[in-house]
Image 1 (tube, rainbow, N blue to C red):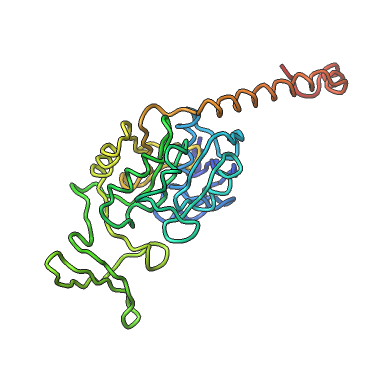
Image 2 (image 1 turned 180 degrees about the vertical axis):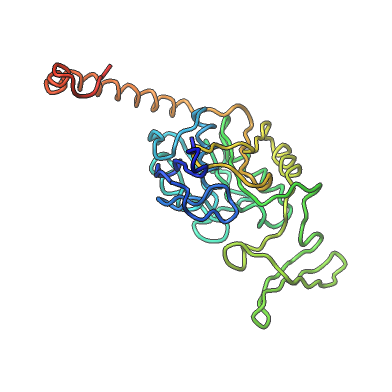
Length: 299
């Protein structure tokens, strides 16, 4: 728990570093981790992943290695993608560069392959109709799998499509300024200025601003029966949000659970730890330490 003298002290649930909260927050309740640079949003993703897989709050650095569990990243940041690849059979892909994934129509060979998907800041860039992307995410998951996503959204009444009704949108630079040109249904052209790009220009064009209600409705329509927004994080891990919008979301078609092969690996890991502890307990050095009141107490 945070110190009463410093409410921003936390343990990073990505790398395990202890942060004293002295760094600049820049609008968030907790600053980036001094160890790995993870943000509140990235730590929120890890928190949801831990709860969905194990039913409790565990730091990513303390996750068991479960290669039978298959994960897919859709533009995940490296700060979580790299440790995830060490813990699971996990592949990270991107919307705007290689290795890429067509989130609106992935190959049928990929359907039903993944136990979890993390989709980070992608759905706001997808060409309409965006419901195809939600349907693809559902098809990629095995029964019992889940998707964690982050996307900019508001608490307004509806989603705002920035280029509603426009076909064949082209983004180009004119006089050093990025503009978009599209054609309406009647064949006339429309010019759009003041474009919003996320992390660079081009395919990272923001096409919409979701609202929370529509985001939940899109997930439900795609077959996700359970949708949970991370309203309450965990201050112990530096996960607490200053505003009630654009929060990480987890969605599943049923109750989330580890696959049978993952459970078997987890059980074997516990058994191996038990064997190691029993063997250590028979060490002559441990026995000597016990005799003089030193060393660990092993059950």
